[in-house]
Length: 140
Image (cartoon, rainbow, N blue to C red; front, side, top):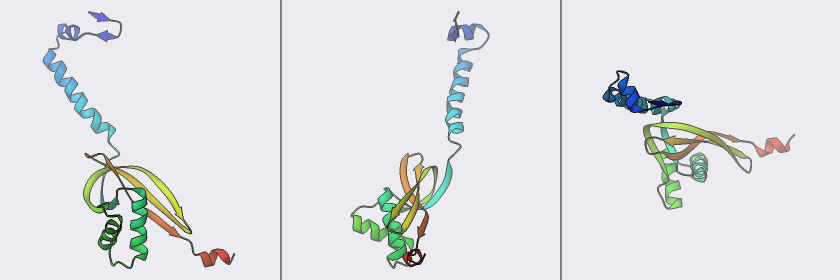
């Protein structure tokens, strides 16, 4: 009943296993396999933006826009872009994809990409922002 490494379902059934038990074990394995592969998921919350450039705009607006909090900075970015791109995310499962370091003039922005589950959408948020003082650089 077996052909090399391939064992037919009927051969398994003839060895004392019922087909129902075989299908139940196979289904249990298929359900458990994705859970093992997604061990890197963790819960995140906070302000995220849809695009990398929007995340940088949000950081700038938060730092230099004169707004008292992140909510007003996100609303200012959304109004300027004309779409709802930066928003607060309640606690949700996400996988951290990677970091990007972006430079504009004397500022370096480190933003992180996250894939949210179960929607599988990518959003960006600030990881760090480093501002170098140009006066200090010129004094060296």
